[in-house]
Image 1: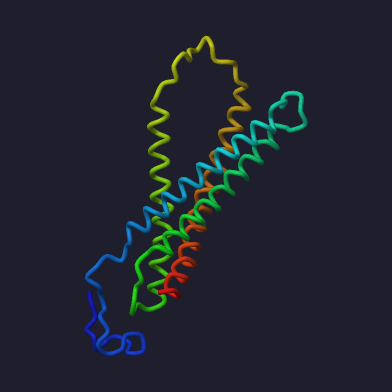
Image 2: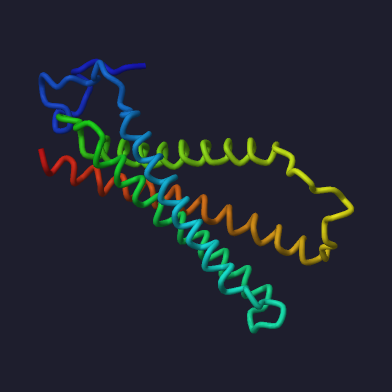
Length: 192
C-alpha cells in the first residue's frame, strides 16, 4: 500500500519529488555487457588454467604433485577465475548502467548491487545452459570397452572437491560482482 506524499519523511523526499520513474530500474544492456565480459574473461582464464595444469601434471604419476594438492590448486584457480571474471563483469555493468538522477543514495546502492547480481546470474545461467547442451552430446568412439579403469574412491573425492569448490566460486563470484557493480556505478555517477 502506498503512502500519501504528506506521510513521507521530508528530509528524504522534499516537496515535488517524483517517487517513481516511468522506466525500469534495470538496465539490461549493461547487465548483458557485464555478463558477456564475465564469460569471456572466465573462458580465457579457464583455458589458461587448463594449459598450466596440463603442463604441471605432464609427469604426474612419477612427479612430486599429489592428487590432493592438485585438487586444491585447481579449486583455488577456479575460485580466483570467478573473482576476477565477475569483478570485471560487475564493474562493466555498473559503469555502463544509466544514471539514476534524483534517487536516494541507498536506492542507487541497491540497484547497483542488483545489477551486479543480475550480471552474475545471467552469465551463470548461460554457462550452465551451454554445459548442459555440451554434456548431451555423446562422445564418438567411446564405449565401455575402451574407457580406462578409474579408481572409484579417487573419482568420488574429485567429484566432491569439484562440487565444493564450484559452489564456493559461484557464491563468491556473486558477491564480487555485486561489489564491483557498486564501484562501477559510483564512478559512473561521478563522471557525466
